[in-house]
Image 1 (cartoon, rainbow, N blue to C red):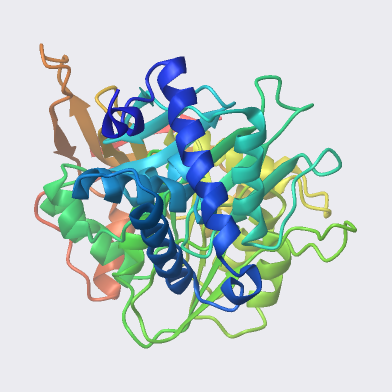
Image 2 (tube, rainbow, N blue to C red):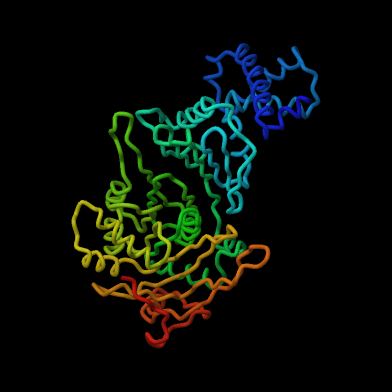
Length: 445
């Protein structure tokens, strides 16, 4: 088998072993000739360049004779193994991949265009996978071992990383890398079919009129992507504070303060939670607060902030429907140290939350705004949701693609009046309901 074939045929166990042996041999030769102390003083790009140059000299001196393509491939594999993340390095450079999932040394999955597929790649051993994991977490000054078997972190380049190892993981060391999402504008999302022009006009008016908006959706439905796009509608010059577990938002305004939570150190001390940051942000004179995701007691602080002068704030919550989002917000708010009766929490949500934008992830991998709903209840009333837009899907075609249309419905009169007072027009596609009988409302209990 040629060298090129050995380097590009990891599908079989024999091919994988032969490739790993070849890479290991040249990696050992490379390590014999480099000065590790000198390498530690170089920047990452300089280290890679130096290693590639030294390895090139080794191959020229000791052979074998290779074509230009074979030589480049061998150098890439060896340097990736010595310096980068081995077989994961090309995956991280592939812009079409949004998530990398490693389930033990023998299974590597990726997500492309919303679809998960298994790749014909594997690590040579559990030890090699652990070395790769340790290299990843060390870049953010974290460690993973039996005493600390779970790590959730963000890489300097922005990717979110989750690691869980035995004995907690029965399938071996498990690594999940979520690609830093590209910042899409709402116009780009229209091109992707996630919403339409009429919905953009409505959302723009709601954000500029300082409605409090919660983006709701399941895992991977695009909550952060939409939240980032909505934030682009906030007028420049307003003081915006973003609060996230792992910083992903990419706001373009000039007056933005980005805050990120911090896990406990190896001694179990120094943890700073989302709730700590929300509370502190209220002392920083924000015009708007954007919370990447509420998932605990900080929900109560966020709701109080929304109803006490910080209107126009944005947040996301993990929920499968608009009704579910309200129930989840109420449950999360009850997790605060202050024990508030459920009826009082309902009052808090009714007085602070204005709009729920529900996202859906469909079987063909597409992501869309499945509903825009206005919270039309007040005080301690049962939640009353008025749908102003929804996606109506057609039966799936032979190609499996999900098609359909966005249906626009009248806005509640109270919502339209508030837009008018802020100088924002009601998009003609929606109109205004003459009375409650024209609204598509439902109760959420």
